[in-house]
Amino acid sequence: MSHTSPPASREHLFTSESVSEGHPDKVADRISDAVLDWLLAHDSAARVACETLVAKNLVVVAGEFGSARIPDLLAVLEGAIPGIVRETVRGIGYDAASGFDAGACEVKLSISAQSAHIDQGVSLGGGELGAGDQGLMFGYACDETPERMPLAISLAHALVRRQAELRRSGELPWLRPDAKSQVTVRYRGSTPVAVEKVVLSTQHAPEVDNRTIETEVKRRIIEPVIPEALRSAGIELLVNPTGRFEIGGPLADTGLTGRKIIVDTYGGSCPHGGGAFSGKDPTKVDRAGAYAAREIAKTVVAAGLARRCTVQVAYAIGRAQPVSVYVDTQGTGAADDAVIERAVTGLFDLRPAAVIERLALRRPIYRATSAYGHFGRPEFPWERTPLAGALRAAVHAASGVPQPL
Image (tube, rainbow, N blue to C red; front, side):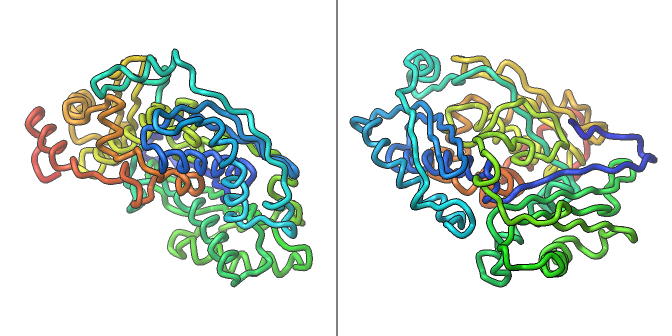
């Protein structure tokens, strides 16, 4: 769904969710991105489309790969991927006690070389890159949080990050890697005014009792994350609402790369083009285009040109220039959306090669994106807004909007 702008007087509830790095789908995402990072560390121009399935005692890695620098690439990958898988699973925190043994699980591969027809569409010559596929990507930003993300998804991510921190530190030693969060925010018009409901489900060791789990999760995870000023008078906190959660991770549920695309993005606050990110090298516009769209949307808000901004970018396979760019400030713009859109297209080069260079995407930075969202985290280059001043000046010149905004 898309969280569009309601009438200014209307009150409504809006909910977003997140999942931990130990959720089966996120285990799959992390393995795919770990394989991608390994290849980029050995060849920054490698082509990667890596998908992972995890199930009880099983990891299947499949995909298409290309490299001009690594001889016998497929043989090299066949030797490297099992170790990458086991190190990744172990790093998440799974072991025999938590139900998914990194050392004992079976690892199967089905890998091949990238299609020559895809390559000819991407490699246009002269350093130019075409889009590796058609597709549409969305970026979003708003002024609800300092990181310019919607409040519900920002809090949902913070809850599962906190769960992981307490698990890894040993402060709550009975926590296990699999967890999910959900946050419901009450809005008055487009302004968040209170958190009404919080759900936190966490895998746990068998010896801990339900009362301890509920008490400690509320006290050590939920209360430190949800600011007291934001809690409604009747806030409802639900901890493991189904009861016991001893069996989790791939032992309990199959995981697949790319199945948490709303968690990865904006929690449902804007449309989604349908493309997943993990396991894809930056020539894939599903990934690079979405990062560029976020960069633009955040720059619009950072420049004071809007309180909320949705950006859509679309590409055709084999073409460098996008087929369309669309900017929607949902009635909050300081200038007409068409004026902001023209300024955006004049300032931001959205050809794949330009996006990759501007955001320095040919580096092994992707494993960290595989949990807790791809956006709203200052360590990622698409979160920076160095062009905010230039965009504000361009809109001012075109529309007469006064500066500063």
